[in-house]
Length: 96
Image: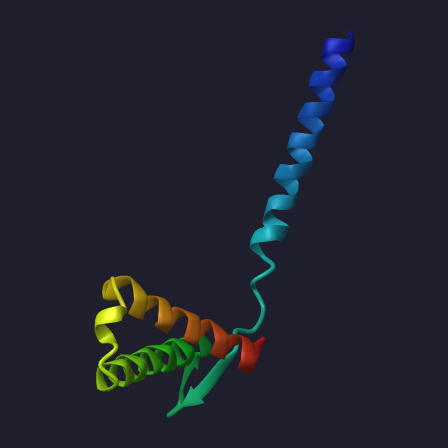
């Protein structure tokens, strides 16, 4: 009897979690933050990612001008990380 009761409780908790799953997936269904550019709405993350890439290019050129580029290794990991961190920082500053 107790074993059946334990299975019933665990099944109910599983069903409760399953019933809450749509709530977790629908929380992002709000109006998307976007800009109207020439009649088209662009998501804000596109602008933040483009600005992050531009800031990574600026940092690359600055390090190359200061002749410190050789200290930044592996560049294939560092510059995308700079772009990502700049993008996320801009997103948090303007939209967070």
